[in-house]
Length: 412
Ligand code: GCO
Ligand code: MG
Image (cartoon, rainbow, N blue to C red; front, side, top):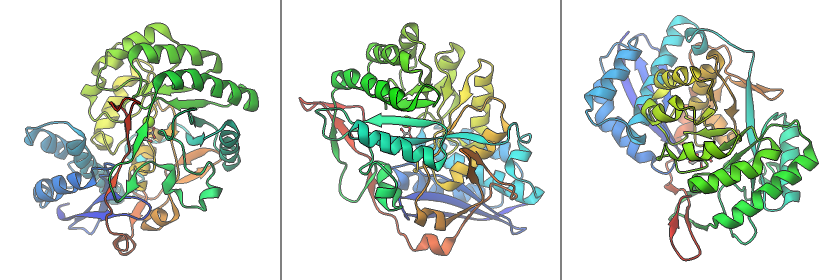
């Protein structure tokens, strides 16, 4: 089965998405997600200019060989652009293999290890009342685990706070629940770690008082603390029994987590900006984390992320795959097939895409009683409606960035 055609499709229904579409001589179509939020066109160029010519004429069955060929023959390895491009090829080839076999991808990965995937949603608020409304709305929608982000007194705008606390207030337009701004230049936000460290434990105390001890609660530190500050936060959140504290320190410094770990039993999740198993080598071996946050889309596809998660499983470390709206429905489906099949699944982030995105990417995955399932259509189970995609041309979009009160740029 030979790859005859490869196209890179950029579309911006509720936000920008990059999709690789492969067609074989037998007429099978496979799609893969290559979206890198805020740097989308770099991946488009990598795919169009460098990868597509290598794909035409290749045997679509040879997934592992194609992965190794793209990774090693480039000579320049790793990095988010390269690994998102490789991921898209990998996903599209799994999609094709499933369609050829007449099986959903999770069956090819060993079959289901569970009936559905526990998913968490994003609650946030500028005040505790707003936050409670947002939590309640998530519970009503069926979420059984919820991420809590709260504004910090004295700071104008910070990561993770939706402009409207509830989906209802956004009238189904979910773009505002993610921070990328379309057009213009990046928004500047402000940050003060000491205020944050003082405030966040009070928020968790209030949420536990309001919603009780059962509900799994998560929190994202979004790379903004030093190791000792992260240790302090982990310790002060212990009474509120978090499911995880995410990205408590900037991810490049793997050793930072050793210090955090020495001080707190709050479970740690890291890795949404990692892209290979090498980024996890030390933190897995030393058991410095509890959850792997990588997305299929940013970590070389199903083939490579499965290797990361198999490695992690030796240390009882579980998956917590990245699933904000900047992962396309194709990347989300790939995560669900992988999550359903592996033994060490932990939780899946699931924010829900907007209506326009759902019309471009026709999905067969389901979300019922708080559990996701990839569905049983052959392949990944997501089809790209090319005509609908064509209605939404690319729009430049940037993520915001942070400055401290004295003007210093800080991690966002
Ligand atoms: C998360 C993430 C996202 C990222 C976003 C950047 O935990 O879901 O931190 O919200 O900020 O993916 O593009
Ligand atoms: Mg995160």
